Amino acid sequence: MQPWTEIEHETTLGLQNWEKVRPI
Image (cartoon, rainbow, N blue to C red; front, side, top):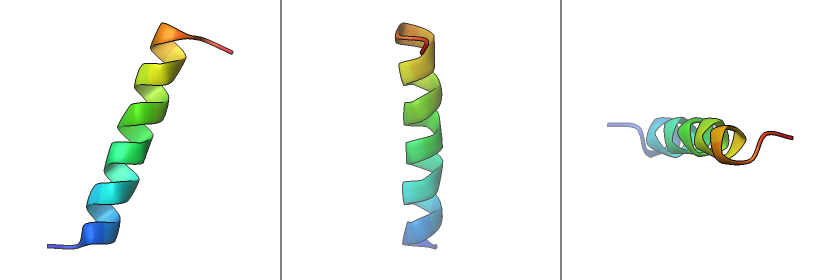
């Protein structure tokens, strides 16, 4: 159980979803 891993994973998914919704 590593909180930093969860945060990093969520951030990665968030960035991927954001790129899908709004590609820069």
